Image (spheres, helix red, strand yellow):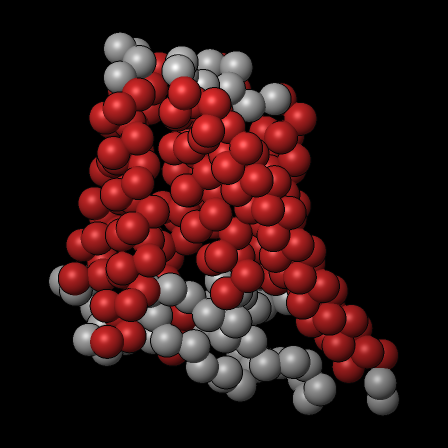
Length: 221
């Protein structure tokens, strides 16, 4: 699997892993760097979350909220490219990047639901996916494994959703532009949601494979 803010590399199983357990990608194998351009972009995205929520739920300045959301989507793509081009992958980046993605998705969903832009069932689906992945992280920790890296499919789904949300806001407005934006907004939302759930399913399958290999190893003489 691949993180957008760090290179991908298969590493041996953690100390104490039994033979036959699948290799996983370990963030600890990345350099321990803080002051990098990709990390600065990830921090910038995180700082934009409360501002975005305030604009959306307070004065309802949708235009400026759209700007922040679109900038977040662009920097999400850019920090991964820079990490590879400049060889600036890091442990911190591998944590910050998916954290910023999830925060934007969760906060945007809640805000759009409160504004009645998106239905509650859509919020339940995507938040349920995050809950399931949280349980999978606990399972990995139980067996001594680090979190699995972000998959390309998950990154694609995240980008679709981050671009869907601004278009949903435009479609919620008035006029010809809102009418044109509507079909595009829901196409991006449906595809993004489907891929997001599929990426979560792949994660669950990977964790199940690790657990199965561990149990098989323990049962073998």
